[in-house]
Image 1: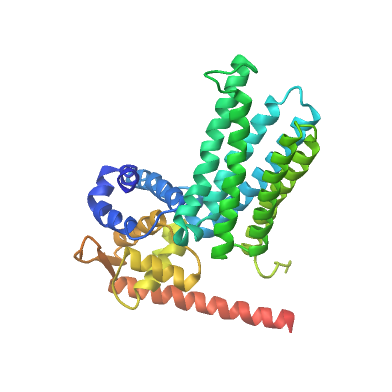
Image 2: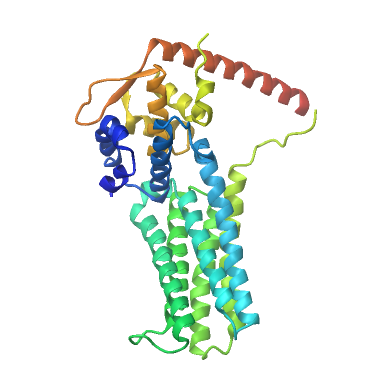
Length: 253
Length: 107
């Protein structure tokens, strides 16, 4: 991965800093936060060498990363809940709701990258698994949606589109559970938020399988459980934003 | 007075953190990251670190030493030390002003 990340930088930059930068990256595990930081650093290096100055608000460092991650977590949670509410209110036409759900998963990925700076230092395997599961799940869910749009409820090579969609969305929940565990163990963000996210993820998984065992006759159980899952992410996002809030509110002079 | 730090724009904050880290002697990139994270409680990403290092080196505030096992240490230059002192005195005066105002408004 280090060689790949180095390739993102311009050749002139690599000639000067490449060797020591590679040595630095080899010294400790990299997490999604580091990879995003390096990708933006590489973009900055391209612009800087062209005399275009520094790039983007990300240069404000960790507070900006925290803020972006927090807003993405809140947006992802809200989109997830909207998607399942939509699907339950209009079960005959779930495609728009599913698209919203996938957008929610993408937002949660951004949230994890932004909020995972410290967790990846101590639990890189857990954080990468937490990140990879929703990423793979999002790809599966998208493939499932495409299959459903093209062939409907017919299987392709024995695989149903809706099956891929469900597996993909469940992967996001399992990934979120791993993220909550890593966050709790690191205490990088307020632990109550991590606990709420972890419990809500477990409840969502249990509710899903209970409802599936009943032949899908209790969709509201699933919607309520997924709603709790969404609330878990929203709470974690709000708590992350509070970390970034000024201690004293400014008052007019 | 040397005041190139404001010209670093969005890199001003990580640049000060790096200069402070180097104020007690040369360090390589990983040691700077670890020092900043320990001192501030906030992570410094590798991309941000090297973007700031490159700018500090361009401005002559730090200089690179010979690498040791691929790890290249950096140290403060005389200009960098003067600049850092100016910046910290300015921040200190500003912090004292803020604290006194806070004490008046809450006292």
